[in-house]
Length: 193
Image 1 (cartoon, rainbow, N blue to C red):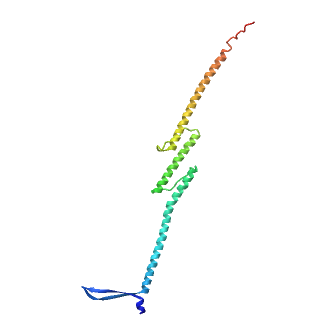
Image 2 (cartoon, one colour; image 1 turned 45 degrees about the vertical axis):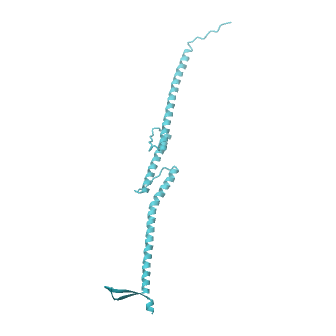
């Protein structure tokens, strides 16, 4: 009776052309079944654990590949906002983050060019040329207007200096003429009373 309680039976009928030829009884001990199920469960849990660990490592590697360049660009943006133009972005790829990095590099070059032009102007060099990148490039357009306005102001100052020099020369000639004519004029006699 213990044998029957520790085993599972199943029977399969054998038939041929509708005739019952017999049956096959298959039995398995519950202990072996439980051991097989336990082994299968252990293998499944091990595969799941190893898969989870590998997936986690892979996700960390992928996230680091994505997060590091974005973090670096955030630091560059922070430094630029503080006026530190000595910035470089070395990241290069063909994905969206690579496009973002390329845009940052172009922006840094643009700001460096504007800063160089501002420095040239501060040293009196008005020959610096700035070209707007687009119709909406407010900074470059404003710099071009400023340079043109300073050039016009200097032109007017130069013209006024020339006018003053000419007027000064004319006054000097008149003054010299008056001075040279003064001894020739005889003093007027005062009538006696």
